[in-house]
Length: 145
Image (cartoon, rainbow, N blue to C red; front, side, top):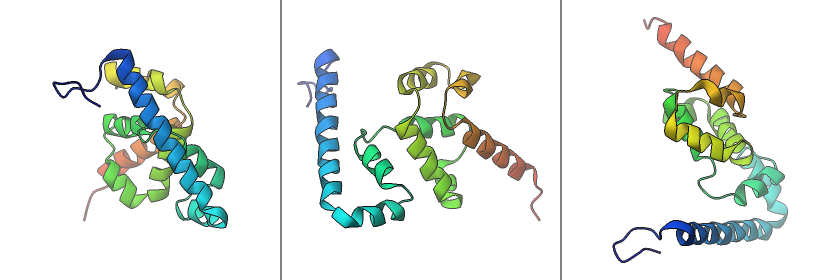
């Protein structure tokens, strides 16, 4: 849906259209999971989630975990390297960000002051991100032979 100049629909109409598209896509994903029947548990385990978390994530918009990607970048943590070195940790960060947290507050903080430590008070991934940052710092100090 675009206006004649190619821009997304403005204001309230645009937000309503985006919400409707997200809602329909989530309903489709949930229906697909229901069709999996007894295989759902196997699929959930294959991606490192419980069946209930898989359902919960399917109900969320596809961009529900975008804040964690932006937070990783703000902390100087390479998302691709993290995914290769610690795939379970990367998936858990995404899961926690998708299912929990203060999305609007996080979005505002990332947009206006990404380096303000206030995010440490409400982010459900704080401890994991602190550990990753400390690990990256320690790895940078280790002399390479």
